[in-house]
Image 1 (tube, rainbow, N blue to C red):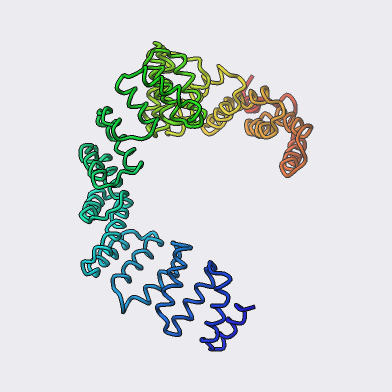
Image 2: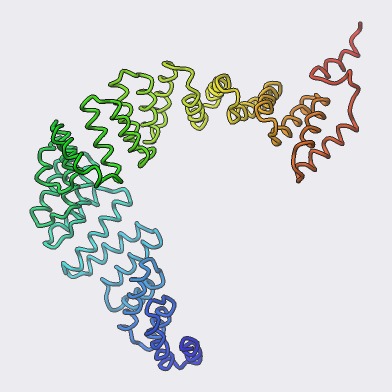
Length: 470
């Protein structure tokens, strides 16, 4: 009952008593954000600012994105500590996704830090991170370099700086940064593995042996150095230990590929694909293997898929087009190409491939639905009806298509066929809103049905014929 009592006391203006009651509840619920906010609020009323700061900081340890805590800290520090005020305001703007404003706040915090290294260093690190997020790597690099001027810079700063250099293809500077980290005692696995990856990029895998402590990385270095027997021996030793690690199977694939055992290489790639579906490496490895097997078609298809998962849609389409020139009866590949062309805005060309797909697979409902819609949108009801009829032929209980086909018959003035299709729909479809809609359409058509000799696709011709002189 302490919280209820405290709230009543606070409402009555008995703040000291309320504060004491809130504290009693705090002993039992130290992680209650609402209670911490109430404690901070009453502490401010009682001018216990130091205690209020403790409560608001405790809120932030529980919820670092709590805007209320930052706002209250800003109110506390605005007249007493400009450094902490601007840090709080910067954090508040980060929570509000106002990153540009946050950078200005943190710059001001540095100006009010009085040269205190312990206060400036973390702020510069945050500034570097913000500039990365804002897409300004030059400024991010500048901030990280300034952080590294201090003796106690965290290893994360070295790693971030190296990654920025690597993204800009300045591999030498990236390597130098992480080598500097190791020389300064930052020789964690994270630093070592990031440095190893850079040595791979720099085509100096021999340096990895003295850096990496990761067995899989060391095997990859052996393969890069052409030490196949040693790599195979190590792969055998660790196979069971790393059986759940996708990288094991990538290394096995690389070993078998280099050894020209392409079938085993494909098996390893397939296992890797089970663990890492749609990863670019899957299709890259398959493409290289099929190239070595002189299977130009499958190599081209896999290069297309490789570019597709990497987001290079235009390149992927060109590769699929090349694959089609090599083999024009692969339904799955044609379906993929048609879909890509359609989503890329090449609708007319896409329909050509959907038509080819229907020729190869007359049960391809998705392709026939797209073709029916395409021809209807282009005013060719006859072609639209043709594909709708094919859908019904392949899927006799497709209620939605029955209804659509009836509407298309009606639109084409083939009233007899429309009536028959609506009746067929009503004989098989479940009760519901659309059932009632079709019933109404059928009743209306049967009341206005023209003479049998006037029905059919040539109804308009027959009407006109009545006025033509025989």
